[in-house]
Length: 441
Image (tube, rainbow, N blue to C red):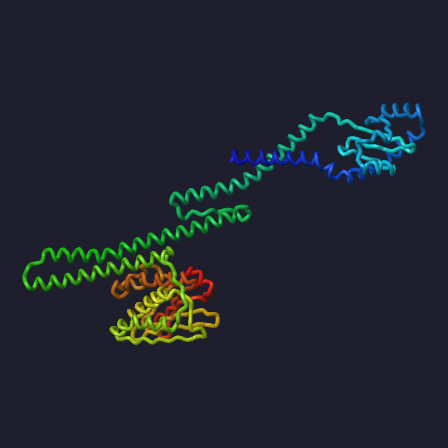
């Protein structure tokens, strides 16, 4: 703080000294005419008295009168002729000819024309007031220092609080926030710090939850793999044992595929959250997009003895999006619906006059409780703890859906369907052709 204070103080003192020097050396020449008019008005009575006094005397009497004037005046007086005014410029000479008082450019001399053509020259010498000037400037410097100290301390106090908050946050206290008064001049900076701290804390908490969920999800298939391998190693060589080994190998392959699927889902979610998966925006047909999704899940829906209805409507048959990502989101929603639907799944796409695309996937299953609808989009979250991986998946599909919607500048929400089931709605805003060109570039 001391170093910053000294730097600021020296800067202010140097700037003030420079300003005073500039004022003293330039203001009088720049505003000479104004100062001259001011002097003429302020010395009008004095000039009249001098003119009358000296005008009453001629020759040697005037010299005696001038000597007497010198005894009683602060200025030094002498008489000049017009030929002695070479130091004056043309404007000043014109003023002399017009009978006006003329002030020199350094404001130390003035010239007063008398009635008989002579010029009274008066010059003043400044008295030495160095001690008083030094004292005055010291008082100004002290007042400046006190003002700067008060100002710097006021800011430094808040900056110190912000620095301490940053230090505590860096030491792992993620709940630390900078609490400043509303009158603080760095309140905006403190709010930015608090917003950054909240985002970092949320990100770290999210990563911890992800790591906990990943470790939990990996334990089960890894444990099954280890158990299956142990059984294979202890198996006999009979025909019955060979048949059991074949079944165990198939179970092991199923567990390996499950692990591969889990890793793929994790990689996909990680790429979407980090923005590592580039978006390939293009103009696609809305009806063709949802028809392709319906065809992809047709076999799964048929195996579960469900019906899938598809519809598309709206004034805009095309939409600019990444069809690969949007199709992935719809596939996740349709597969999620197929797990819980009782008999029917509805896939609907509609656009409005603004070009906004709404994709709806609705089932007639048990639905989701209102207090679980926000958390259902979190990774590894399952609303029903009794659901296992085979009925509830890995808990990553809906998180991927939300991330895809956010990448398109949209959102996804969960409502109650007409039949009481879950109704997922993805809303994607319209994109112009310029955004499409920028994506391809």
